[in-house]
Amino acid sequence: MAVTDLVDRQGPVTADELETRVSALRGALIAEGVGEGDAVLLIAANERESVAAYHAITGIGATAVLSHAGAGASELRHACEVTSPRLALFSPGTELAAGALDGVAVFESTSLAGDA
Image (tube, rainbow, N blue to C red):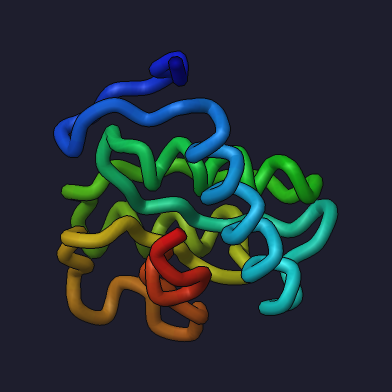
């Protein structure tokens, strides 16, 4: 029997399922040029995708710059000015403020690495 390690609004997730997702995201981030020491702006709600993205980012030695899914344009612009992220990653269903991330490569996590 699989042990549940995380539960979100989509239901339970096992450690193996989470690691599969982390691995897919890690590979996709590396393919986009993210490496050790880079900053990645993570815009996400409290759910499995944000947990996987956080571990994928930090697993390659990059810094996860955390922002909540409801962040406004000024907050996101400020985060970009202060951290100069290589890219921004957001979880499905997150609505980004228009113009907030001009000049930053922006990816939805499931489109970047598929829906593992």
